[in-house]
Image (tube, rainbow, N blue to C red; front, side, top):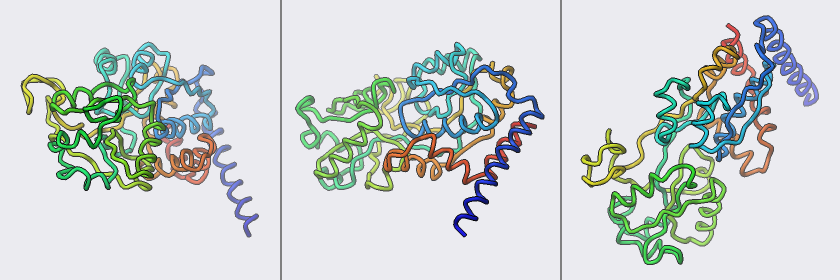
Length: 323
C-alpha cells in the first residue's frame, strides 16, 4: 500500500507539473528567457518566502536566479532593475531607500505575503524574575548591572539586529534614556545561538527578535513592552515622551509586503501575477523554517516537498497567473 500511495503521489505531482507546463505553453509562458532575479536576504523565513515563489515560477518554465542582497541595500538594486522582486519586506523597517524608490514609482508593493508579523524586544521568560517589574520597559535602568557585559559595562548590553538592518533600536535606547548599548549581532543565526546559550546557562539576555519564528515553539520568550507606538513617532521629535528625539516608542505593528520592479509586469506578466497572488501563513513558514534550521535540511528540498504536498494551492496560484 505504501508503494501504491507513493506512486499515486508521484503521478499526481507529475500531472500537476505537466498541466502547468501545458498551460504555460498555451499562455506563451515563459514570455522571455531572461532570468527573474529574486532577492535573498539574511534570515531563513525570507529564504522560505522567496523560494516558495521562485520554485513555483521554475515549475511554470521561468529561469529564476536567487540573488544574495542586503535588506536595506536591496532597495537600490530593485529600483535600478538589478533585482526583479523581493518577497518579505517588513513595513515597520524599510529604510529611506525603499521610501524613495516607492515615491519615485520605480517599484511598487504587490500585496501582502500572508504572514502576520511582530518585531519586539524579548527576554527569556525566566529573566522576568531577575528584574522585578519586567516586562514594563521603565524598570530596565534598574537592571543594567544584570545585563552588563565586558564590552558595555557599566551599561547594559542589548543584542540587536545586524547593523545592515538599521539602527532604530540604538535610537530607541537613546530616546528613552536607557543605560544600554546596542550591540549588533552577526545575523539571525548569531541571535539564536546567543539565546540558546543564555537559556542553557539561565543567564540574563535582552534582545531584538521577531515572529513568526520556530524558536518561539522551543524557547519561552517574553516581549518587553516599550511606550506604545503612535503615528509620527519615527518622524516628529516633538511628539511623545522625549520632545527632542524620534523613536521614543515601540515598534509599529507591521505588514509584510511583496515588492517588485515595475518593469516585471511588461517583461514577465504571468510571473508578476504569480507573485501577486501567492501567499503563505505563519504556521506554514515556521514549519519549513524548523526543517531547515533545526533539522539541517536543504532549503530547496524542503520547499519543493511542501509544494508537492499542497498541489491545490499551487494550482490555484498558477491558474490565476495564466488568466
